[in-house]
Each structure stands twice: as C-alpha cells, then as structure tokens.
Length: 374
Image 1 (cartoon, rainbow, N blue to C red):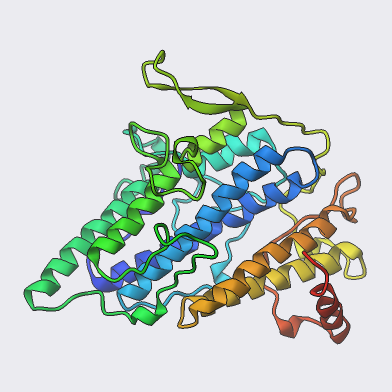
Image 2: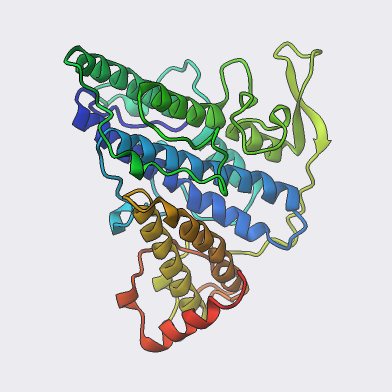
C-alpha cells in the first residue's frame, strides 16, 4: 500500500497545495506504467498491453480532474518545471520515504505485483508498520488523502457560504473538457462543491474500487461495458493471476479470478536496462540521440499539459498527440543496444530536455521524425 505524508489541510492555500501534490502524484504513475506498455509492443501480449494502457488513460483523466479542481478554487496548476518530474527509481511525490521505490522497468509480473499493485492497493484497516514510528501522525493512503481534501472543501465552502461567498472562484474558461479523449460523464467542468466531489469520487473509484466491489461504478469507466472493467488494482491483479476477475456467487466475497485466461509470453519482451538515464549513454551513440529525442518530446508534452490547464484547454489535443508520439522514440530506444550494458537494450528515462538543449541538426532530425506516423 502506498502511503502519503500527513500534510497540513486547514486553509484554502493548503487545499491548493494539496491539489498540486495530487496532480504530481497522478502524473508520476504514468512513466512507469507507460514504459511497461512500450516493452509489450509487438510481443504478442496485446491483452496485457491493453489493460495497462487503459490504466494510463485513466491516470491522465485523474490528472485532468485534479487540475480542473485546482483551477476551480482559484489555483494555478504547474506541470512544466523540472521538479515536476519524479526521479526514478524513487518515491512518488507526496509519499512517505521508504514506503515504495518506483522504478522504470520492462514489463514483468514482479513489477505488476511489487510496484503497480502496491501503488493502486485499496484502503483497508491496517496496523502501521514500525517504519512509521518517527512520523508525528500516521501517514495517509491515497483514499484517505482524497477524503481529507473533500472534508476541507466542505468546511471552507460552508464558511464561505455564510458570507454569501464561495471558494469556487476560478475562471470557468480554464476548465478542460474534451469528448474526443474523455466522455463528459468522466471529465466535466468543476464549478462547485458537488462537481468537485464527483470528480474526486471518480478518481478513487477507478483506482481502488470500493470496500465491497472491485468493479468501477456504472458510468465511471472508459470501457464499453461497466461490468467488465475492474478498478486499477484489480486490473493489475488480473494480469498477475493470468485470469479475468468475474462475479462468483460460490465464493464468500462474491468474486474470483476464474474468468478467461490472460495470455502472458515473456520471451519476446526486450531486455531493457532498469532505470535508464540519458547520461548513461555516450553522446555519439544512437541510444543517446534517441533518449534525448524521447525526453524532449516528453518535456513538450508537459509544456502542452501546462498550457492546457492554464487557459488554453484546446491544447489537450497537442498534448495527447505528443503522448502517442512518445511511442516512436520508445520503440527506437528499445531497438537500440545499451552501449553501457551489454546484452541489454536502452529505454526511456523521462528527463527534462528543452529546445535550448538541442543542436541545429537535432532540431532538423526531430522535424523530419514528426512527419513519420508515430
């Protein structure tokens, strides 16, 4: 289970800070999940790739909802600074140190169980381990964090209403909705307390399910059939168990992993070096060039997202296009030998690279690459 630091949540500024942390946390899961998808391309593991890819899309949705909430309460989402990008391997933003170190690694069932399922694990009553003894207060699970956010929204809005005011003073024009990418039932304008609560409930339900139902509530799924779309944790557990989750009246909990098999063939997955860094590759190698191009594209993606949630909501189309184009350079990296690690291939590192870091020939190569379908 992933634990968050027990942050101060008392004022409107605290609420804004918490939502920026939520934005960073929702984003931070995308690089590890996306890398697993990249390493599954053309390996015959299409069903697994689709399952993880569906989680990536919903994490983008969750990031968007968090940005909309921050805009709604008069805050300013920040997504295009170097510090916004986590260090991999490392702890995710806002989390308690040593609870979980998240790597950038190729797909494996161990990665699913030991990392992805831990990130998405639902909230259950637990005894806090000894390693938290130094904490002034017990840490928060993600579900507990979002509940505290709701509690503070409720309190602050009630106080504002007494004075005939509201905390939802943000510019409605900054609310991002785009049905090309997300149905309006999932990504809707956050304009008041109820819509903020609806957005938070969707984030938690898609990630954790409920204490009694592992499936996403009807109307809160990107899939076509609500009944076959488990919450993130259970989707990852399907992959680990190799079986679909189904309703099962013969079991006390009402469910079992006894549905259709989920094939898993590890033989064709590229042997990517764990936690690659651009600096690991000599500057005159193909791996270095493609790593730099990948990171430049990734940085442009963050810039586009930043613009999207700061008054230019139409830029989500550019952002999503760049996300898809990352596949081009990820594919090139995974087809390149790691010059520093014989027997392994290079991989994406998710680092901050701006236009100023590119030479004129590199800019020309990028322009040429953009004409090639990702």
